[in-house]
Image (cartoon, rainbow, N blue to C red):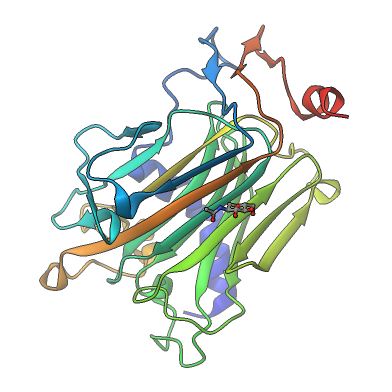
Length: 286
Ligand SMILES: *[C@@H]1O[C@H](CO)[C@@H](O)[C@H](O)[C@H]1NC(C)=O
């Protein structure tokens, strides 16, 4: 599939694809209802080494019915049978800083590995990897530069879905790499092994949209974009139908390191407005 067409597809269908995941709906959307305050990360730094854990660590919430194994390889997210979508997320929210996720993505046509920041009002800063590079040919890419989807949503609407090529040659399904997102009131950047692969300035926010500015949690997971039960376009986006003969397909996460720009106790929305948006916190920390 030519690159241009793929980008169009991502733009048009990214949201549909994510809904299939079933994890996008917040339990309470503070723009629509009064919701309880959410726990914030109080420390300047949060680090977890999953290779040293034997069960779900403190500060993480497992999706309903999900199985995530903790082994010396790290946290293992496996697509082993149809319908599997193991995922987990932090029990705290954070407004600005940097998230480093050291991981190896799941191989397999149509298998999606994801590392997503998302908020209760459905702002998102995403990174989604397809085990066969969203079906881009030739596969594997001879120059080692993989196509990765990086998306931004504001209040549930995608304002930018870009297919980004990782600049450095690498083998993401057989090697661990550190994938980072930096995000604050001025910019968002996506990095691989400390190299910026994409950056967006808040001043370039498309008109009619907001720059993401609500507290986010980090969610990690694998899901079957190419599950034959999904609609045709989701399967195309994912890279094709999953070949169950090659299953199980596993994503491994070794560690998560979070640098918190504005530590806080909790985040609260009142009258459908966030009380501690970037403007308030930036003023507090000046
Ligand atoms: C976590 O990230 C911070 C900031 O980049 C760095 O100083 C620190 O060494 C990292 N911690 C670990 C355990 O890698």
